[in-house]
Length: 202
Image (tube, rainbow, N blue to C red):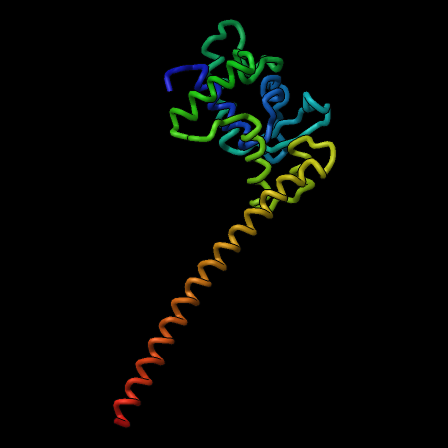
């Protein structure tokens, strides 16, 4: 993708899918918010812009790679000081208005052949759903997403429940079709047996 702004929109969308950060939190994400645990695991510790609730989310390798990419790109434009030394530097820059960001993201979905219009809220929702599907406890997901209460996280559980229900419906439908085929085969076998007996007694 040649358009740098569209590329930034793409990176931020993917980053949100693997961290759950809302667009406002990505716009205000600084390198000082990215910390490293004793075991070497990198994570984000920050307050949500919307609720001021602190969230902690370990970095998925894909999210970590995006941060490293942004750091290197910004370092190329820095002459006096490296980005790593500037803890107050924003990870995603330069910023544009939300409307422009939305238009840039629409360039991404068209380029990828995605019919549904992409949004950063969709990316955040994707993170919550993927976490639940992976078996992560809802309490941990709430902490990672900065939800003030578990009830805010329950929507992702409902989505997963609906998917489970649909998957079961597919299984039942498949089994029903199989049972129907079995019944038809047994019926033909019974018919063949009856015909044979009739011929023997004829």
